[in-house]
Image 1 (cartoon, rainbow, N blue to C red):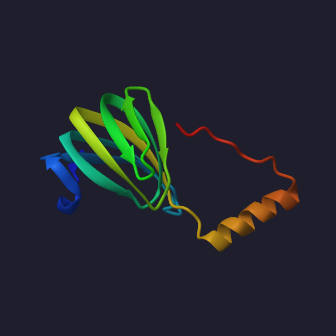
Image 2: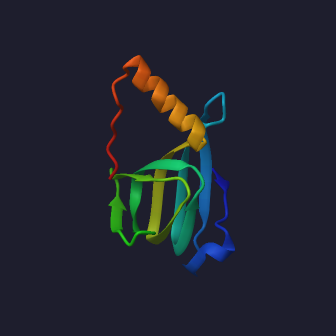
Length: 129
């Protein structure tokens, strides 16, 4: 794992130290999976890409931009939309696997959905925790 410092302007308290190890990347660079861990501290985080996380070890207290509060522990899964902020408070340590996907630009996403409708593809559903 390599050190991936949190933007100092985002740190609210403490001295959180983060590390990342990329696991895989799609050929088109639009999807990545990685392991990420972090020591104690509180910080804001901006999600540039859509991100689904599964907590592997420890826990994190999250305050989403809409005011929703959650505590995620080992085995919990959560989704963060691209373009959103969340505050993360790690009391001791947290380790997660992250699945990141670069969202299509809106016109491309709409065209893709229209194509799926015209082809009669069944709508995809997912669970966001």
